[in-house]
Length: 509
Ligand code: PLP
Image (cartoon, rainbow, N blue to C red; front, side, top):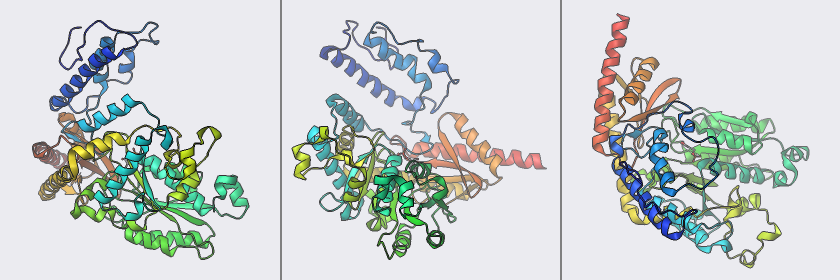
């Protein structure tokens, strides 16, 4: 096989399907290919999209009748796949949110695939469950989360695929608590006939779209989702939440679920979870004794809590029923990996457990083990904890703190220079690692600035709307990003902002 740069190289004596010997050789070649890719990433443009359909056009119409040699298959990583890859691990990655994939987590993922176990029950691979439980307990201590989330008490942690799934399972548990588990038995429609009024969910108008999706999937209905306005920093107005809950209660509806966001997707707004928890407590129903379930979505920003000085991101967690963040964002753990904790695991398990005969086993019946199938939507689950375990051990808490502090201080530098620049406006003062900017000449100029930065090729930024204005978001969190990359971005941003201002003013004159 001839090898181009970055092309996996293996001997041509292939066996199909692979035997252990060929797997060894192909595996080593693939690891080399990944390491080459990562080492040379900075020299590529961050994102260069092909024409729609261009990738499919390189694939044969039908699946191959005869097996193909593994070198041909791996060779297509360069020939086909790389033509349609956006480089999320690039040091110039400032778009959306970080999706860090460290070498440690890649190895953990590989080990998980190599073991190929199904961890649906403790008894189907005890290590899969126990390492997960243990690492989630580690995280409780490491992030300063409340002890009630530890597995030794009434609560506990579980890995979900995504924050979207975490919100959905939390909402299903909330729905069951609010209906006294009538919805699980009779469905929401019958529950309503038997006197359970429609349930209402609340989140801010800056919350992630996954909350609306969860509300729709859990059967509450979009009509019963209230989007509470935010303040000038993007934080939910707890006073307006209280007023909305009071209005719904007066109408005979049941306020059942409040989702607070710690680090909104758009501008990293931090909802006042302590105040929101007080509002939930005040809404406790005197006759049923129930209050709305409080869920906290700290998808990206939860990682900041490794550092004492950023522990504001876990404020109020001690009053939350569920709290989640995504190690697959800012932590060096590749997608997918969301950590969810609940204060009372019995509520979650009761809402989600179905026990067919074929899953019965003595370990479950002993009551001494966790069966994570009861904590999630699917039955099957893979060994997701391995990559988290590998990454936490290799980085150590010190390494994780250093990474967070590095990104936050780079965000601070960029924000300060933008605030001082005559053509740029800081939309909110960044609480952490996300800088939200706009051009002083308005939306069209901001769009021109976004386009200019992304055209350059060295960086990718993304956008959002905040209080009606277009915003250029610089999310600083990629593992490979250092001060030199942020300095280069700053130079480009300032030069382009000045040029655009001159053009806008020239056209106006
Ligand atoms: N919540 C917030 C605040 C987010 O920013 C995001 C993703 O951007 C999500 C939830 C969704 O994350 P996931 O893809 O893990 O569902």
